[in-house]
Amino acid sequence: MTGIKELRDVVDRFRAEERKAATAVNLVPSENRLSPLAQLPLSTDYYNRYFFNDALDPGFWQFRGGQEVAEIQTELARGHLSRLSRAPHVNERPISGLSAMMMALAGLGGKPGGTVVSVGAESGGHYATAGMARRLGFESATVPVAHGQVDEQRLGQLLRERTPQLLYLDLQNSRHELEVSRVAELIKEYSPSTLLHVDCSHTMGLILGSALGNPLDAGADTMGGSTHKTFPGPHKGVLFTRSPELHQRLKDAQFTMLSSHHFAETLSLGLAAAEFHHFGQAYAEQVIANARLFSKLLAADGFDVAADENGHATSTHQVWVKIGDAERTDRISQALYEHGIRVNVQVDLPGLPGPALRLGVNELTFTGGREAAVHALAEEFGNARAGVRRDGDGARRVCEQSGPPFYFAEFS
Ligand SMILES: Cc1ncc(COP(=O)(O)O)c(C=O)c1O
Image (cartoon, rainbow, N blue to C red; front, side):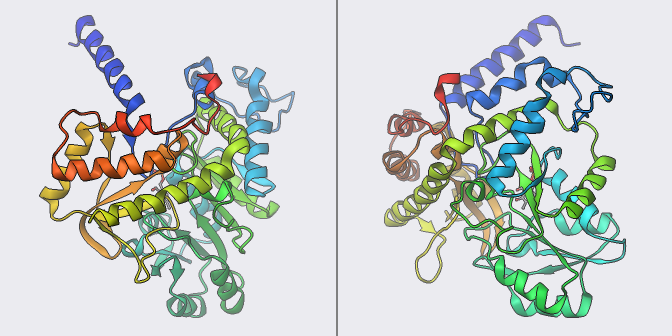
C-alpha cells in the first residue's frame, strides 16, 4: 500500500519537476504553455463542475456549480473565439483535437458508407483520421499533400469518382501553410455537395493570430482542432463555422459524443482567447520569424535542416532537423534535455525517413523568445552536438536572452 511518506515523496517530486519545467525551453511543436491568467481557473472549484446551460436558460439550472461564471464560457470564450476566427458559430466543447475530429467526422460525414477523404499520413496527415473515419462507418480515401499543396490530380479524381461527403484536411506534420482556396475551387467544380473541413490543430494560433490565412476565408465550410499547440490555450478543442446549419450538425454530433467538456479548461480557454486579442498577431508573426531564423542559424552551423529546393525551410512554427541514425538522434536529444531543452523526435516526417527532430518555437516565443533568444538556442544546439558544455545551463542561457512574455505577466 502507498503510505503517507510515499505520497509526500510524490508531492516533492512534482514540486521539483515544476521548478525545472518553469525554466525549461520546450520545443515540442504540439505543446505550449498557459499564461498565468489562463491557468487560474484550473485550480478553482470549477474544475469539479459540469456546465450544460449554454443558453443561460433560467429554467435549466440542473447543475448549479458553474452558474456564477457561466458568461465566461458563453460570452468571453465563445465571443473572443468567434471574433478571432471571424466565425459566428463556435463549439467550444471538444476536449482535444481528436475529440473535435470525431465530432467533425460524425457531424459532417453524412450517411455511413459514404466516403471521407483526408490527408495521407505519409504526407503529413494525422495518423488517426482515416482509422477514425472507418470506425465511424465511412469509407476512407486519402490525398497526398506536398509543400502545403493538395495533389490536384488525385483530389480531382476522388471528387469526380467518389463524390465524397467530406474532405477533411488535417496536417499534423508540415513546415508549409496548407493551400485551401484551390481545394475549394476543385470541390465547386467536381463535387459541390462535398463539405470541406480544415483541421488546423497545429497552426491554430498562427491562423487566429492572422499570420496565416483563415481557411474559412479560403472557402472551407468548417475548421477546428486543438487549442494548445500554436494557440497558447488549455488542452481543449474547438470547431468553427459560418453556417448555422453546419453548426447544428456539429452540435448534434457533440451532444451524443461528449458530456463533460471540462468546465475549468473551457473557462481557461476563454481567458486565453481574451488575452490573445491583445498580442495574437504580434505573437503569431514572431513565431514564424523565429522559426525561419532558427532554421537559418542551424543550417549555417552545419545542421541538416529540411528545406525546399529553393532553401525555404518553413512557413509555420515547425523546423525539422535530421541528425543521423537513432543513436545519434537520441544522444543529442538527451544532451539537450540535460540542459533543460526539450526536443521532439519523430520517425515518420514526410520526405525525411527515420528519426529526426521536429521542433517548434511556439512556446519559446510565447514566453518572450525573440531574435537574441533564438541565437542563444542555436548556439546551445551546436554545444550539445559538440558536447562542449556540461554545466546543464543551456535553457538558462536561452531564457536570459528572452524579452518580456507576450502574455499578461501581472496575473502571475
Ligand atoms: C491535424 C491534427 N488533428 C488532431 C490532432 C490531435 O490533437 P489532440 O492531441 O489535441 O487530440 C493533432 C495533433 O497533433 C493534429 O495535428
